[in-house]
Image (tube, rainbow over all chains, first blue to last red; front, top):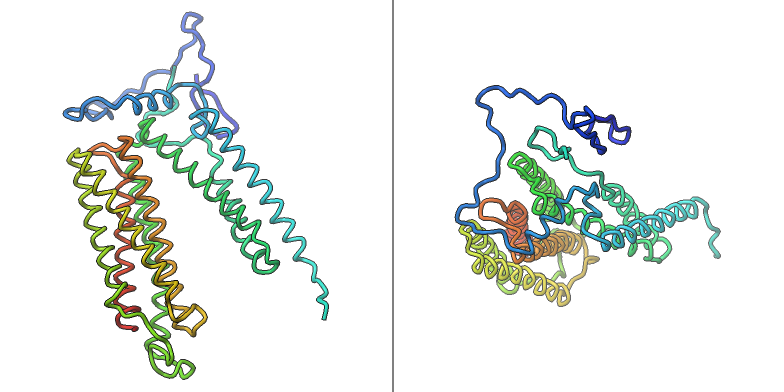
Length: 111
Length: 263
């Protein structure tokens, strides 16, 4: 039903779905809500009209259930930008440590 | 497929690398500053600025994706974001409070080193009724135009919202240009006694906040153009407007105390 994940230290919904016909349940026993519970729902669009086409496409792309984390979900350029940031941080971190080591030793000034 | 959202109205975010890259970038910024001062080499500082900028772009891009594209910003989440922005602006108020303290410390009881008078002997101050007054008018007008933009968004008037937010961004950039001109033409420098220090540090940090606020508003203008905001849900814009009003109020305090009373 639910799986323990070491990375988050929490129970989460399983990524592998057991087919119902083999006797596995996709979800555990339903929650019994007290009578009169209000549930969240979308605000009615009313007079606002349809969502513009490009925006609707973005919504569909980012709501695809492909388990890609949000920072990489926009396409290959996300990976490029993420990679560049990581490389800069790695180079910079090394540069910082190098600087700390260098400054730890007093240099004799030529007087 | 079962949802990992759970039966609650809150947003438990995906694992994200940006807190870590942001922390490392902050260390690169600070260490880079020290390296520039001691070894006259700005390479680490420049790398730090770049890494910080990239982290900010990607982190806020992800928040836009989660809110606008994935619909994860419920009422409860938005309330949390409001509190967050309020607390952040409060911390900025405290930041500026310290510079005003420094100014009043030196100007209310001027010491013998500056000539026992304020402004100090030999300092040629700006006429508060020239460019500084124009800058005041510009920021006050921009406060009105950003309010106009908010009402236009709430009334689903897209063309007026674009126009008014566009004017707001323009006014912010106009202020920055005029202030840069003032800095260039100033007859005194930051090194000219405590007057120069208090003037340039206080107005300098304010100018940086004008640039930050203008950038925030520009991003909102782009998002407005892309129809990210609805009449009832546009917190990104509200946060930018709150920040802009804060920048405006800080200028009013600067103008009254440093430019006018202190001039």
